[in-house]
Image (cartoon, rainbow, N blue to C red; front, side, top):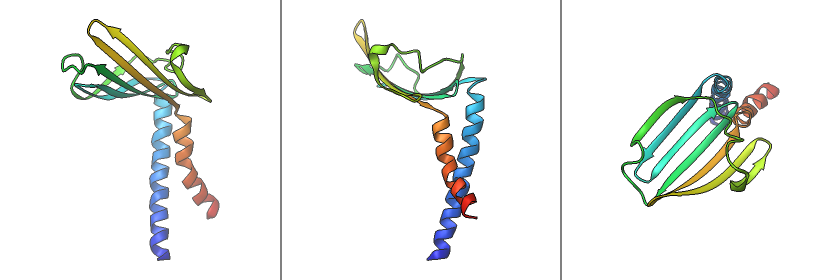
Amino acid sequence: MKPLLRILLNAATVMSLLMFGMNVMLWVRSYRVGDVYGWGGAGGMLWVSPSLGKLCFDCERLVPPSYYLHPRGWFYNTAELRDYYNRLDGNSDRLKFAGFRMARRHQSHNQYGWDYDRLVVPIWFPTFTAAILPGLFVRRS
């Protein structure tokens, strides 16, 4: 049982180290290029935008759902760098702490309405979270 546990721990450590390396690359890239990765459907869109050292997770829901207002399926775009942390008005904030932000907003236009949910996570958080297991492995050795 012990050799299997060691193999699993080593595999998890290697995966965590790879995630750490990818997060560092994403962190550096987020200061140079604005990327948008997402998925669109009839009910709205989901997308992730790394920009200026932050990961912005957005969810936009249409009320009522429409097939014509959004791209369907997966999409990728490059966009200008944006400070997503400071782009929402203060009235929509639910959480704002240590670089994290969660907000919700509703807008109406003609017969359609939009519900926006946004979660902003500083990239240092997943980067250092991914570094915990390799750090423990180095300390143990």
